[in-house]
Amino acid sequence: MAARLIVLYSPPEDPAAFDAHYRDVHTPIVRRYPGLRDMRLTRPSGVAGREPAFYLVAEMAFESRADLEAALASDAGRESGLDLRNFAGAGLTMLIADDEAGFDA
Amino acid sequence: MAARLIVLYSPPEDPAAFDAHYRDVHTPIVRRYPGLRDMRLTRPSGVAGREPAFYLVAEMAFESRADLEAALASDAGRESGLDLRNFAGAGLTMLIADDEAGFDA
Image 1 (tube, rainbow over the protein chains, first blue to last red):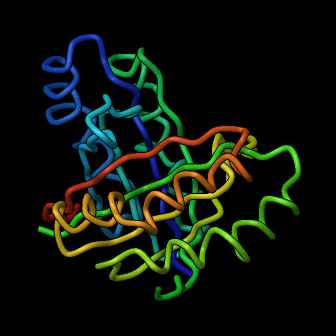
Image 2: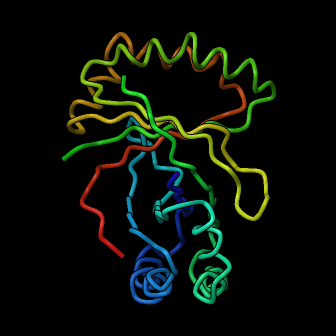
Image 3: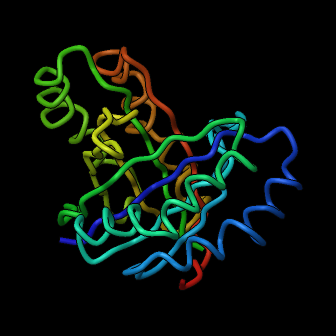
């Protein structure tokens, strides 16, 4: 069963600095996660014209929960965790999703 | 460009009551959204054994942002919004994601 690591970043004080650090420093670290299948970035909007609660949503997909946990425990995983303090001071929320089959509406 | 409505529900006081209401009352309303392509539910875990910040993540997919907004403005959309007070008193966060192409790691 595939597993995703979902990171929801709170709105940063300096979006341009956040974007530059995320692109140029953080993403290259994440790309070194062993077992990473793909990475998807979404910049959400709020509903009904409100400001969104999160500025950026990053989803990292792995073959399994074990692969995800191994990636977080790897050198790249530890390095990415330490790097958070360099750009994510506004806060973030991390979730793990086991991708079960969804159901169609 | 496809669009998703993402609803992140905070941990409820009574998970069993939340689950029953979500399944038996709320989901049937959401399934009536015009233009709904599919609905995916995820029950996330926290990272490193911590409690997850959200109890349930619901993702509703539409063909376009216009379809998503029309669904929210429809009878079913208004009804689902009113129904939130019946089970989601712990709070929730709503986001809209325009599904751009991700990038592979």
